[in-house]
Figure 1 (cartoon, rainbow, N blue to C red):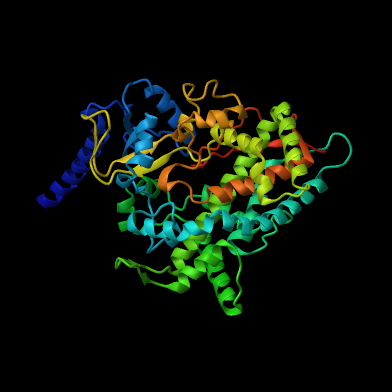
Figure 2 (figure 1 turned 135 degrees about the vertical axis):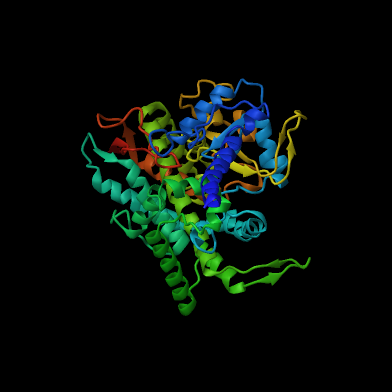
Length: 506
């Protein structure tokens, strides 16, 4: 009886001590940190009424003149080093990458196979998957996929043309959803070889399930807390992150697609084909004796899942924010249209792969859009061993510490980008890019673990925007929300309301 009473008091006391010690870790080491909330750490309001981008930016601005290369931070209860100095960020991402290869994010191959994708994987399994998938995103593979993107973009223009009358005044169109339907159809074709046709039929399972996976959490507050704060414990407890109906939809879709292609001996130049070849190859041994494990259906489905989510959401958001800025800056839009038409004339008015690469001003505008509207707020890495910060011998980042590199905050630092709130594509002229350190612009990350699909994302974004600016003029209207209201429920930068613009035929 007394033993039971003792346990009832001892266990909560022990947990309270562990929590207290964790929350005071940085203070006890003499590292600056804003006092963390007992439950929410330094992200109080996240997924409720504060956008994670703004939380990071406020924290960065509070400490960026502190003189420390990093400061203490708690993402809920995950002890983290919040990297202030871009030189330290460069060491983590590139120079000393061998000690920071892992992201330390939740994934559960056994119970939640779709969570075990390239973005989340760590260690040897990440390295193997990255090596296997890299050939899918070479320039050669992009050229193979390019005609598919052009075909979808032509249908895209047809759909918008039908909504915009030829008479003066055009029409007011909510572009955010329209851009998402375009990228959904592109990804559906390039990842699955399936014509989703969401441009014509907005409500499809593809769109519904993708939206749900980004905005509807599977778990309640406690489950979400464990996933973010204690990913290893969450995995041992066999927690899952992907909603059940989303899991069932994508697993069934992948399974049926593979079965059909193998039965009919169908070959396509798409992402799925590369994964099927990996599955069929099975396990094999390298010259050094290392065994590379083959892909099972769950691992295959996970890679398609993340390619789909990352491809449609990031590109569609970038296109939407880009048009939003161009609608407010007519001189920049006119200059872009002139440049697009000039490049097209040199290529016999045909939108080719080489033609898109030649549209340098378009690329400047996309780069500036990604600076001002950074889709993913920060990069995460985990220290595999104790790490002495270069130039600061007394500062040691202990093994297992999570590193947070606040990319979106760097992008709005006035010391790196003067007048940072102003949309100015000239920041990304060849001369300015050459004079800037690569880690000062991180929408795709940097180093060996940068975004593997960067080429594909840029390609579909360039094609979509080139087609739109060539054929239509975009301007603000009474229904255009300025400034935008961002959605605190999502980790990526999303808006609460649509983006309404006036669209006129050229």
